[in-house]
Length: 114
Length: 115
Image 1: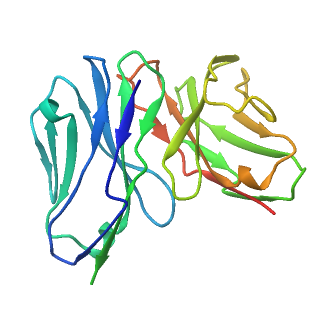
Image 2: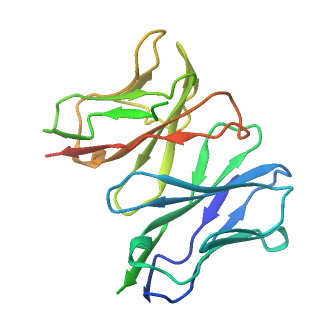
């Protein structure tokens, strides 16, 4: 069975602090895809990143970076120098290579305090 | 190229009424997925459809819920005799093909409130 766990329900940081959002997943598949989505207060889902299970290279995009560790089944997301606009709920998700559905974590609500 | 469209964005129904949620996939996409997000929870898969076919409805409640994706027109998620517990955000996603290689693009969601 597939499962995604985001143990941090809510995080508050002061603007300009760095923050890491944790994501731990479970799957028996050898090929799978991991995602992060942002859901701002307006409610839509904003795609941030997709990573397949064979690509363990960390990725950096501006103030965002992702750390994929297969050994610990984790795909953590770090925001550097956080800004108020980063306040949102962030979801980690997994799909199977042959599957059709996303398995979402329960989300981490991030509040950046000015 | 417009993204996935969902309408209405907000829908209010009284208990016992029917709710119809529409999803127009991105141009060129023939695969549609519906997800439900209950308050304070993550999204849960409901159903996966291709044109005129339901491929996977393992996440659909057994009663009152149905989905279709006709040859022409949008995909429809229909909830009959709504109850308060149906209040949620319903998201539609579409993809060009099957499988995780094909990215799913999400619509803005329909927020259903049952009074």
